[in-house]
Length: 212
Image 1 (cartoon, rainbow, N blue to C red):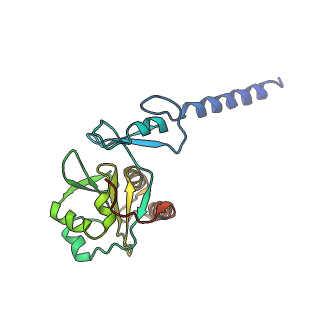
Image 2 (cartoon, one colour):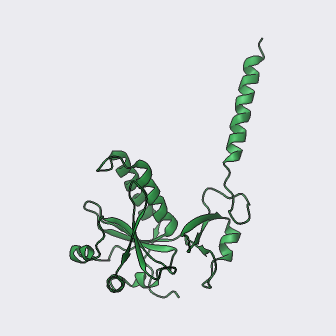
Image 3 (cartoon, rainbow, N blue to C red):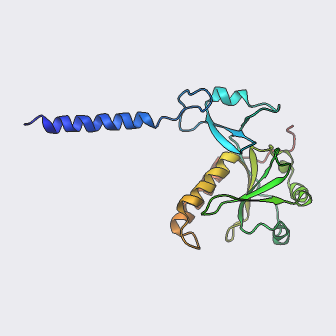
């Protein structure tokens, strides 16, 4: 009679152990176990992200054309970039939270803005993008497909980053998960604020236009 509670607790502990083992993340190329902080690869054709180990990430960290491209880890803040309201309005982007990617597949600049229904895309005029790139040297070497110009012009914010695409996808996921009603709600805005706080903390000094 006294052993049943102990057996029950033992079975519960075993279930917790097997459950924790089941959620171990693995490299989607070689299946090795990977840490929560790991590499990402992008398939430009589908714009799908894959989780990868460091070894597989290094395999695709080259300038040659391959099926996958390694997503960089660095975030660069651009505090000196000055985009006027008039120029921003000329881009015809309907909201102030957006990331712009140079797509090798479409040959266009894709503006993606998060929404409660998921990401929405629009193409940016090539001449407008050239004008935007001229505003800051770092934009001239933004990596095709895997880096984005991330703009935060929500409310009174006017800040810009060169961010890895996986960070932009993470922001999109936060908006989709937490946005409520027309204005978003306090929870969504708290998550968005925490996201940009983290981006600022981890950003590196501005890089000059020297990369190939």
